Figure 1: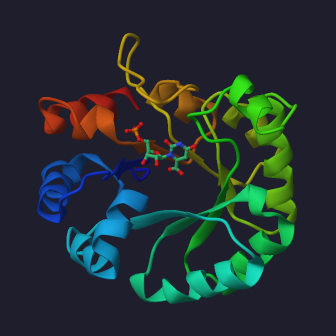
Figure 2: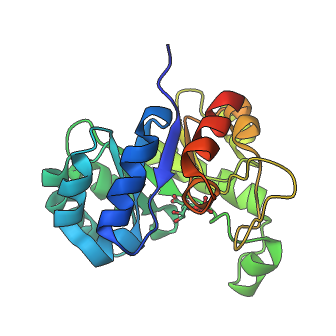
Length: 226
Ligand SMILES: O=C(O)c1cc(=O)[nH]c(=O)n1[C@@H]1O[C@H](COP(=O)(O)O)[C@@H](O)[C@H]1O
């Protein structure tokens, strides 16, 4: 049986609450995603604690700096044995190449293309004239050329990227399980099932589980749709 593609985003301020939530739903997810909020608050210690849950750890640090600095950061996290690490494709080809070269064994390095919280107007405001779809495809091509394992994009683009990059590893956040579910700050959303059917390798899901009245029931319900 295929591994459950859902990585639970633990964007919670408290370490004990994050660990308790991960343990509660651990039978219905495939991994744990620890992002900036968690890492800034709890650092290496927090990651070691969450490893005790026994699931793969995705470190979503979205590194974006000069190549030498990003390579150094990648080396500094080997000890945490992440299964996946994010960097920003907008850091450019050399940064992506050096990040991949510095990554630990068995660690997939994936590049964020266009954040799921952005739409075409947001891109225009930062001087990008392409729409999110074309910009995501363009950055996916650059990430592929740089030798990365895959990219992060929304469910709106993953099908098109998959056609161009058959063996890529595709991380899709911005997922909302049903129509009418609050999208919050996310602007390019699809359902987990739609993302999976379009070729996503990993489904990143946070608030639809972590802020649900019954997180276990929410995780089970999402699993049942996949
Ligand atoms: O790299 C990511 O995981 C990421 C990229 C992106 O474009 N959009 C995005 O929402 N994310 C992350 O995915 C998670 C989505 O959380 P929810 O909107 O609560 O499901 C958060 O932890 C974000 O940091």
